[in-house]
Amino acid sequence: MNLFIIGDVHGCFRTFSNLLKHWNPATEHLIQVGDLVDRGTRTPETVELARQLSEQYPESTTFLMGNHELCLLHHFGPQGPYPAWLNWGGRSTADQYKLKPKLLARHLPWLEQRQLLWQNDHVLVSHAGLADFPLAVAMDRDNPDGILWRRGPLRRLPQLQVVGHTPMDDGEPLHDPESHTMYIDTGAVFGRNLTGLRLSPTGEVLAIVMIPVDPADLPD
Figure 1 (cartoon, rainbow, N blue to C red):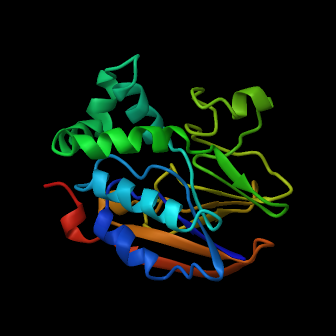
Figure 2: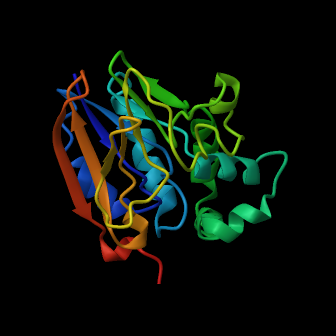
């Protein structure tokens, strides 16, 4: 199957729904790089849509863990609350879930089950990417240089890396030739675009779909 890889959604439910119209479940494996949650106006609905798709198409969807999901789980888990998360995107999410407690109870175990990466022989997809550190560091979901948090250069792998996490200022995806990485967080929640990257199984770029964010997805 071809791959259809979606960047950081951040609660932009309407924009996410519009981009999904370009995904063909019969011929494409859908992968989302994490950060479904926070900042946008409809995080619970966004997560619920992803959860439903994962149930409807279990063999052809992968929703990855992002650092914002990790922080949400920390906040609502036994070690919570997590005040720092509230100050960088979590407060609106917490307020939205106060109105939908049944969805929160359904979403927490689903979010906890999100994997850190998806890969085949030619493509590796994660939230922030694998950097040139020992694997124990690179795969540590709490490490600032790990797979959910890394800012800065990434390791050049035999595969094409596809990542989100670092928003592109111009709202367009970027290929870094040094690390052979595609950056596809195109800043939807900052008023730019939500990107879907269509790849062949061998990592050839077949299409780039960019949906301008729906203004209703953005906080006032």
